[in-house]
Length: 269
Image 1: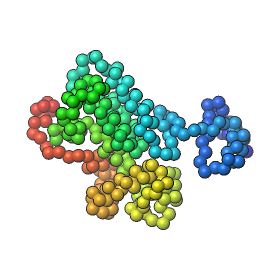
Image 2: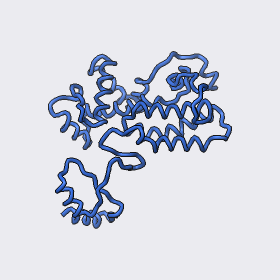
Image 3: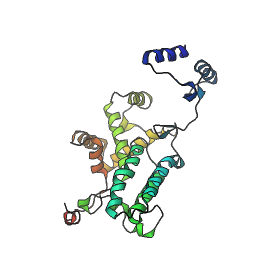
């Protein structure tokens, strides 16, 4: 029956399934049913984690070692720029436009661990101040949180990766609160929120890594703003303001410094 459906899909769409390049992944299925499905389809059984669109997918929280494709990609990019006698401003622009472009894709998908974020920050910091990936005391003179401040607050306007990751998780929280009509949100309300709202929900040991991250951020925001209604009001403002939810959330959640009066002179604005 399943094989007939696959054949019908191919005839309708014009897309032929390559059996040798296809795998099937199971969850909560008996061994007997697994064998029946494998026999009908001819697929091989897949093993987690596997890569999809360049990123690893797993039903469990990704280990720091499983972010190695991203780390190696960043290191390879930096190695390709070495020896080109780049100025500070040149290295700054490469971090903003190239390195952070690679990082942003991962940040928008996964709740990233502090260890991974620290490793990425270390690479960017060393490249900015020394032009290399090697650790150096000269790269530790200025706190990275200060470097990530906007230029009018004395920083260089770089992205705080941890805050950016939190902003994408906050958007998941907001969509769950709104009960957006996405399949995965309907599943969350069916599986996690049958008897209570997101604001009363907790994470269990067996909960998914993403759900644990959403609950952890929810609790942090409730404590930060002094109640879930104030969090609601803030997130509603982020969604309604010009620019969209994520940039406005970042502007609110980032580390803030004092305004400086020399930024227009230094940056010739």
